[in-house]
Length: 331
Image 1 (tube, rainbow, N blue to C red):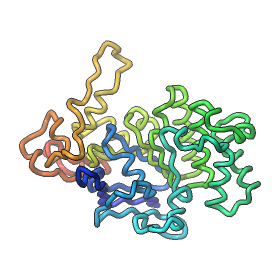
Image 2: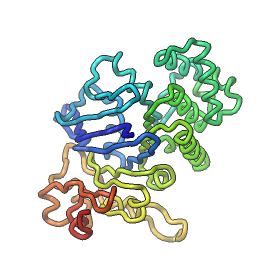
Image 3: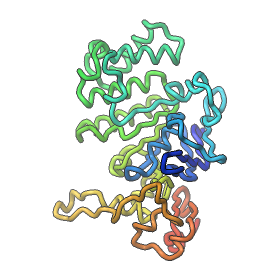
Image 4: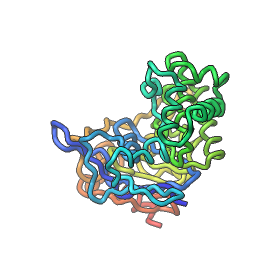
């Protein structure tokens, strides 16, 4: 079953410098029980896209007229962008949709215990009593691997380690039994051993709860371990998408190849790191044509004049690149 369908999502922001485009004509689908990686450099539009799924972008956000986000639940479909009242948005804000943020310390209120915050959101989104909500919260803290969960339940966020805070944030996000979980760079601030634990935990959660997960990161190495499919974003556009094994083993877009080449190799520790040349342009100076042509080593004259369309290369593998489509041919 298709859990989430995003169609032609375009999102702009009105600023003092003018209206800028943060997300441009983005489309993708997510099945229940599936993990999709959303990757790209900082400023590529990953988090803005994710926040649009919960209408969490600020008031100066302007959605394109053709933008559509559809969430399919047991009791019907939800047209996310049509929701206007705060009461109606409870289904996408902590109800059927939950979000794990990059820095949990900024998400937990410092003067309220972890437990009180978990209980409050459960009572808001369910019909549980305070006692029932406390029991479920402690069970979920234990489920994500927090030892002595009943004691941690009574502590404040600053009393927990970074890894434990992240686990508590995951427990809080999962306690309402969401159908869609958005994980916005949940491992970035953690050391590698805790990263591995969090990745294993999320794999287990998909198996146990059958939810769909959108995993946002700049690290293709993490995506290779966690996701079923991946969408690569650059300056608000999806430039390549497909099954993880296809995109990692045979990247089509020059930007995807650049991200993979930038990863350090454990087989050759003396090999120099190869960064993607140049810098990502400001949204105020968005290039015409293909948005990546200013940094692309294979760009042609047409790349600066026309916008390449997403073209299927093989089964579910698609790419928006004139050169690669000509070379490989469309499926």
